[in-house]
Each structure stands twice: as C-alpha cells, then as structure tokens.
Length: 362
Image (cartoon, rainbow, N blue to C red; front, side, top):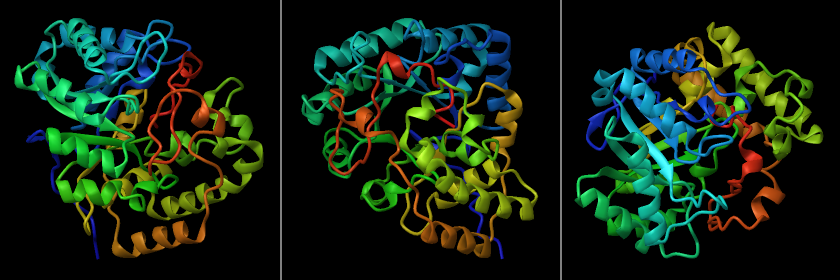
C-alpha cells in the first residue's frame, strides 16, 4: 500500500515544487560553473517544477557575491522566469570576517547589498539569516528585517540552523516564512531537538539542505579515495578515515533498498525526506539538493513511491545504525564564529577556508 505524499507545498502562500534547488555549488567552488551550463541547470530546475531556489550573499569564491551576480545574469537573460521562482537568499554575515551580523546596521547592509545585486531583475522573496548572531537579540534582528517586509522590498523572513526557542522568539516578532536546517538519512537531529515539532506547531515550512548527506547518499562515493584531496568534506568528522568505513555501511544498506526499487540511492534518500513532509505532526519539508548539472536536477526531482513497508524498512535501518562523527567538526564548531548552539548541534564555520566546497548542499 502506498504511503506517498502528493500534496503541493507552499511558501509565502505560493505553491512550490516538492523538491527545491540549492544554488551554492554553482559559484562556491574552485572553478566557476560556466553560464551556459549554470543556466541550463537552472532551466532544468524550473522545468521539473523545482521552483524554490536557495542562494547566498556570500556564496562565491574569490568574490563572495558571485552567486548574486549569477542570479542577476540568469534573470536578465530569462525575465519570464522571475515570476515563476521563489527566491530565498541567505545573508546577515559580515563579508570581511564571515561572522554572523544580525545587528540592525548589519541587516540593512546585507539586504541593501542583495537588492543592489538583484537590480530589480528578481524580487527577493525571502531574506534568510544564514546563522543566528548570538551577540544580537533575535528580536532585534527580526525587527530590522521586518522593516523591509513592511516596505514591500522583501517578501518574507527566513532562519537557518536556529534552535526551537529562537524560532519561537523570532516568530513572535514577525511570521517566519521558512527555517533551513540540515536533514537527511544521515542527519535526523531535527526530529529530536524540537525544531521539527516547533515548526509544525507554528506552521513554518522547513527547507532541508544537504538532503543526500553531502554526496554520501548518492552511492557515488565508495571509498575515501573517491573524495579528492582538498575537498572540504575531508575536514568533516563523518568523512574522517576512522569514521568513513563505519558510515558507508548505512550507504550500502540504502543502496540495496534502492536497487530493489530500481531507483538511485539519491532518489531514495530524497523521497525519504519528502515523505516526512506534513505527516504525523511534521511540518512541510522541501529538500534543496544542489548540483551543477541539469541531468542531476532531473534525477533529484523524480518522485519515488515509498510504501509503508519501505518506510518501515528504512526506519528500521536508521534505528539499528549509529552515524559516527558530527555534521562538521570540533574545530569548526569552536572557532569564533558566534553561532547559536542551544539545541541545534554542530555549527558551520563561514570562512574563506570553506569556500571550495561545491557539494555541501547535496
């Protein structure tokens, strides 16, 4: 018997596809994706119904705003696509220090910079604080963003990697349009730390980044040597040599389930995330896998029907398996990046040293 969810999710009252699209990898990499390839990939996202796009003010190397520039060029060439896309941009980060800056001045600088780069080519549907600035009360940060919403310059407010208590405080000041968190078969923390239940209670959709475990769950990584030297994943605990061989066992189990269903491991992993959406006290969940290739967009968007028996088997695997290692690592957690820690888990260090990872969103 099928247990598949088929309802269309919405953000800001606008329908979006059950799979979104992460734009980070197109510009936050050692080599920039050529416009021709990037535009074809973005076109494919729209063609498959993946019309919720997630970018960042700082998603660029060596220039932080390369992601915004790419978005501008795309909508300049494809103006008819602007009304079809729900665009969320992460900001609220000091572009010199890469530390969160949720002060009113920092928020105004960030939003004004984003709007300047978009140059009217695309409306900023959601402005999202990349991380919580613990030196500024969240109420102050949200109030500053709300001024832009009231002025009609921004459609809504988003949060990222925020605790349940912070989500409540923020939502009390202004309705939160979406909360972005890591969620996958490898990262299920939101099911136990109160974030998912709080979002469900408040009616806030969740945007799930890294829904295929930073590539771990694609089935394309067989051994540690498949991850190139210099790839940032080698700095994350789950990819440490002593942990890799243990964690790959879950991948093998997922591969076997996918093989029996005649789908790719990535399709199975994404369908598991989508399955959770709106079910049994869960909020709406939209995964945002990222890629630079249109073929991968098409693969990611394909719906896989999961039965209750499938879910029971997968959930059984998760209960019997313990993922080894944190989502990032202790150094990245403890470095002075002023990230919120109450109930969220590991935090990401937003620094230039992290700008060469093009697969974090997948």
